[in-house]
Length: 336
Image 1: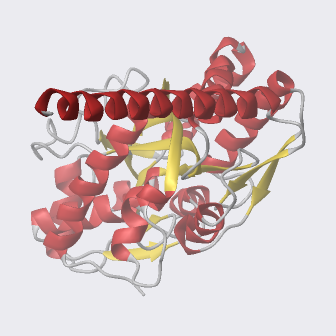
Image 2 (image 1 turned 180 degrees about the vertical axis):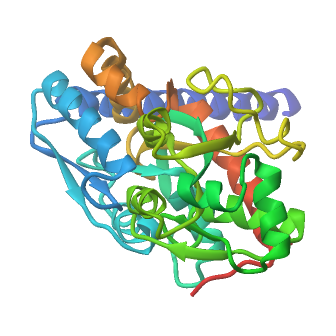
């Protein structure tokens, strides 16, 4: 009796195991079949920023390559507003079928959900496909303003701010944008008061510094030609080591602000629940953009091309959510 009863559960367990393996194999085959059939119609890439912006440039470079590689039109759809949150939120609610994708920056995924009270999406609402670019910020100032006020270093900016509270104006691509938080954190660390002026995109904020409407900002790599021409003055970079493109510009640590390292990324994401086979196919297609010399040149003008695979990109996002969450809590930052 005992032996017979012992064997019966063993048979049931074996049967259940076999059925489970069969189900998993069927699911795997179904997922692969989906990936093989995808895409059979146009794909839409949503961008939460205006045409001509940093993120839009990345999206259009990717879409051109993907369209050729996949044999289907890949259309960029700009939905600007709320530091990218309008477009990002739309993708979070989209069907996870590989036909609605998102190209966005790190702010909209790792910061917005933690700082905006009205945002309902979160980082886990997305399936990361690939990080396309990674880049530090460049602390730039208007040269005429710098000359008038004897500004030559990052410490000079802080010194001016201490002598003139709230007189320095800096810009960003919107409240809660990573450039905004980075400058606010730097101001708080140095005990100075500065005035934040939000714009709809980083390129608009850059134009404001170029024209003298703003004094300074943490700028993107699109500032490099203006720095080379003397239209902007670079004082420091927010990277652990100096940029190859700006070998004479110190890091923030070298400028006197230890451990002040801030980088931002642009990446491709899909709605959570998108079949892994499609996510992996998107990654394989996307990373091929680096084989196109023209496309690679465009990407390299905006940051360091990385093409991080899905699993590593997911880990990067999770770490930044935690890191920026600590900054937001420490600085007591909250936006409507």
